[in-house]
Length: 128
Image 1: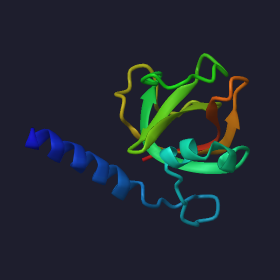
Image 2 (image 1 turned 180 degrees about the vertical axis):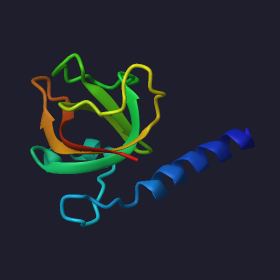
Image 3 (image 1 turned 60 degrees about the vertical axis):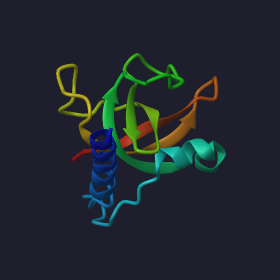
Image 4 (image 1 turned 45 degrees about the vertical axis):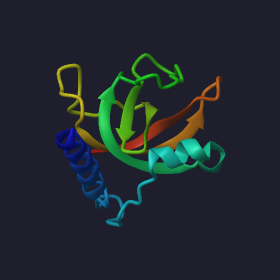
């Protein structure tokens, strides 16, 4: 039991530390990440805004997450605070045979589907 708690805490700290800041090639300015849980708490605040999230690639494993059904290729990114669907560009280097859990940074516009399910329309992807 203690081992499972330690492992969970270690994983969360690893994600938070590694997702702290990453240099962008566009302007060499550090990217600020929005926790996915914050997006879900105040969707209207982030709607139509360009946001950047850092988490783990989850493929099509939404875990009960409402799918916006934009395309058949939508995929999920998950951080320690929540998960969200992503549509548009598929991460280069990732595919059916890649182990889920690859660390990824997604920059894009937060939009709402017809059913009001939030999703990110990709502008840029960085594999870490």
